[in-house]
Length: 318
Image 1 (cartoon, one colour):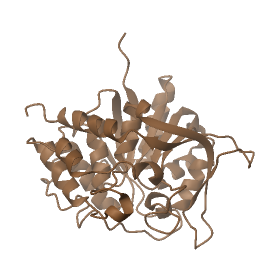
Image 2: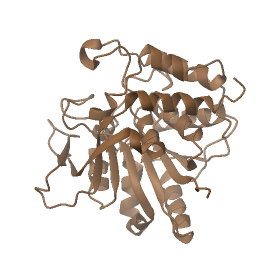
Image 3: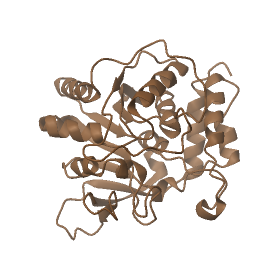
């Protein structure tokens, strides 16, 4: 019996690791990318939208629509990223895209795809690789469409380790903590991949070599990941850098490589010192349902082997 691919929307802010996440999804026949939506985050939304178009074209998938979303957080000022180079792709120069982003707003497209899923008797998985601004607006404007969301799989947060942009906050959550709280209080089934897990996924030189290759996609990935090396063994325990957002795609394709624990997630959005902090109710002390699965441990070797295999699918001639 043939299994139908899982329909997903990728909401992102490309960004090096977001771009690799998009490529992994395109190389995974288990997934059907219905749309790529962009949001302000690692880079301004205009830059991220252009990067998404370039990455889709690199992979030969310019048939997938790109939809520009929110250019700032719900309430806070934009929080600029600093790790992705001047163009968001670590200086990788890809040709000008031959296609344009749709004039339809990302939130409107997400709503349209969810209505379509409801009419077909199916539900969509929403993958958030950046701040959750678009999804929060969708839930506020069209709360009835939450019934057509199968689950939300996100990279974000930090629980038992420090943040990477503030003392207690991870970048994606800190960039729009109010949006994250809207999403995590909406009663959706969610999977959260925090820094606790992504810091186990280090792009060591050996893993980067396996993910790179002579084809155009392999060369692009190799160049982006060369920039990703944090060269901070004291902090991370290994040479390289933690590869965050692609773990969302890996979780959908190979969930057996991940260990999770159930909890309800709260997001601090009022206190300036701890703004963006994610707090997990592991033991139901709040009485809120444990509607999140928080990834606590990963099989890093298995995940990077998956990455290498799926990226190679996009360079079939090599």
